[in-house]
Image 1 (cartoon, rainbow, N blue to C red):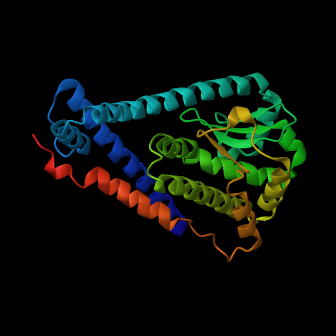
Image 2 (tube, rainbow, N blue to C red):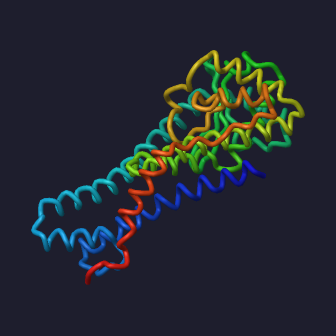
Image 3 (cartoon, rainbow, N blue to C red):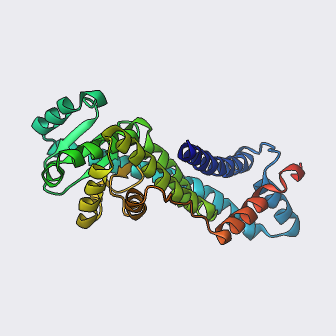
Length: 288
């Protein structure tokens, strides 16, 4: 329950910050393009007073900043969609129909017929993939590396990510970090959110398997192998052995009574508060 609360708080907190900033920029663009009066918008307020003081060049910079942010948002989304399409094409090209059918039938309770794909490659791969067309991707190399209990734990873990749309949610937070990263708390929210979601997926896998042995063995084996295939890197992937949190997960399996803590920098929090105060403190004094 505590981890579920952490997860919801981090996701909705990060999303709220991003949406609030995007809305303010959207109101500013509406004012600049169509001349509509928009109350409670700091960018319009800044433009008004910069015109009064004769700082027209600064206005141009502000316009470029806001417009550039939206262009970056659209570019990031488009780039991710292209990467996803290419990865899906790669998956279909390497699909091992026989092994896929075998594992779908082996775990009927997971109802994986439309979601599991086993690809034929010697590289061990285990991940949840996709924004809307969700897939669990495992490789033939992984099936040779792991024993039965370890493979079971991997599938339970990735099925948790699949059910809860974790690749999509992680991508949304990643989009915020990449486009408005000058609010530094977003980076801390993203890294903590990833850790929490992995721990929750581990908890689900341990509960269903009845033991942490398979999960721990799979993590240790995949940790020795290295990072995810470059074709699957990005915000639409929840990798089973993500480097950023794998050490915390292993430590938790070894010491189940020692819970990981969320990591937030005091400097990051203070800077973020100052940035957001600068953005929103004067919304109610916009000149008309």
